Length: 113
Length: 113
DNA sequence: TTCGTAGTACGAAGATTGTCAAACCATGCT
DNA sequence: AGCATGGTTTGACAATCTTCGTACTACGAA
Figure (spheres, rainbow over the protein chains, first blue to last red):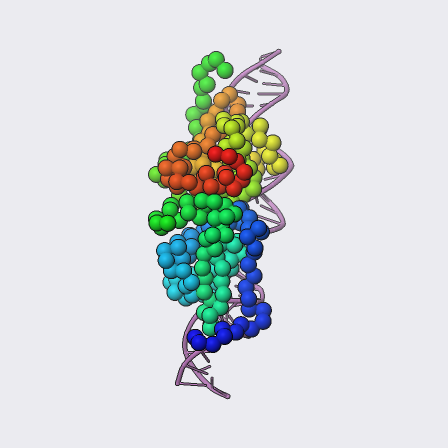
């Protein structure tokens, strides 16, 4: 883990910019139990987790799908670290777009903010 | 509007109780442009509107569908007044279940709370 | 270079969703 | 009674979503 962390071209996942994040897309992304759990886990202090460490009740490919939905909605940011794909919540950006939204969702999920 | 407002049996729409309202269902219900607009319109002081007065860009039956989704999610309460079905936001109950959620969504929609 | 690990890509199957038109029902008015 | 209005029900269709297994790629370690 001491080197560059080089990434092969075409492996940088696409993220929407803050200004492009749409409310409906965010709500839609959060309206799924698996994704809601991913978001809750991330907020519970497990920032920058690899996909594998979530222990989701779905297959690998389904897992990839859900992370992509969250990423394309603008809810998480992902980057590679070795073969692992790390995820973190885009908390500040999301709060700038939709103040209080993520906090309300997390609070409803029992995550203390 | 001076009389009893009698309702034929079987026409009282079913609503979930406060305790039965689920976050995922609420998020899912709000993740649609037509329904988001209905909720915004209701919040913009048009409480207790008949379905007809929303001027939605969909057919009658689709309109019925969206109002049902909102009602079954616990977001609106509906009752009959003559042949009209009136709707109102379940603001307090929703805020008791998921504090700040509706406010955040409405704020993101440009509705001042 | 060979192998294992972490994840992605690609169908495909099945369920859900948003939409409509047509037929229907309930209420109020004439 | 008859009619107009507001809404519901039904059935259909297309699109999207969730899920999976299989095959594949990228990286790190031996």
